[in-house]
Image (cartoon, rainbow, N blue to C red; front, side):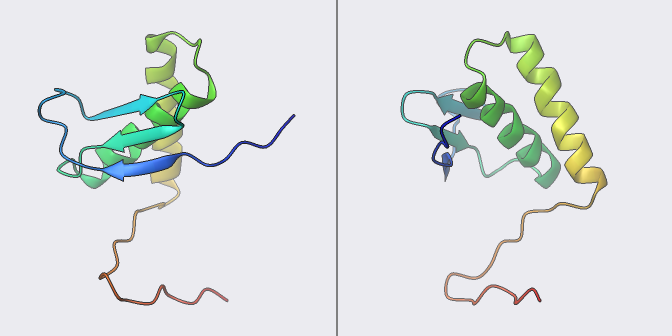
Length: 93
């Protein structure tokens, strides 16, 4: 199996699109509305990645997979850390 590039994630307001997130399959691109809460952001990110990984999957199956994956990650305390623009990331030993 060939290794794919990771998706590019863009955080922008999606009010006109009336969506929390969207995936562009041909461009390997995910867009997420930054106004969402932290848990919803994780859920939408997982949902959109499932669209990119399995483009033929039904919306109901994508929704369930995204929610299940996000719930697992959240229960294991995975969180998004937002750093100041010029801050150095924390060192993990």
